[in-house]
Image (cartoon, rainbow, N blue to C red; front, side):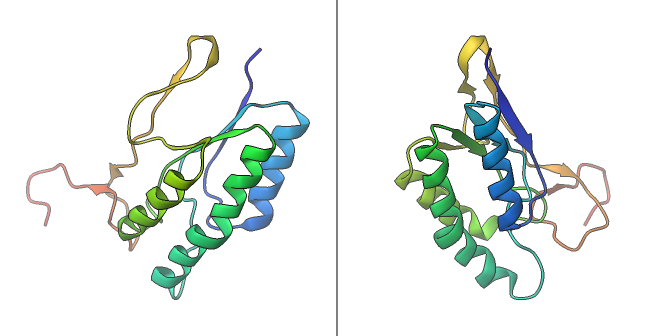
Length: 138
């Protein structure tokens, strides 16, 4: 039986990431699917999200790979679109980690997974991934 873990909204919470990895190992999952809001938010968000991706998240992806667990992730509404090049840079250096939004990914047992990080407009400050699909939206 193919097992994977689905998680969202970790917002850069390192202990949460580690708990997800430990849970995946304990339950013999072969993949973690992160549905968005992976990066820290708050003051200094530009610098902090870049640092998190390049230093902490890069190491985490390596630990996933060492445990034999693939990671499929994507940005959510709190993850700045301007940080996407850094995410893709880290993915290019790490086998076993994939961007859910780039294409369909084939999983064992005939399963496929893909993400879409655009969401209807919400009352949140960040609007990078909001779709304004009604007439009159500015």
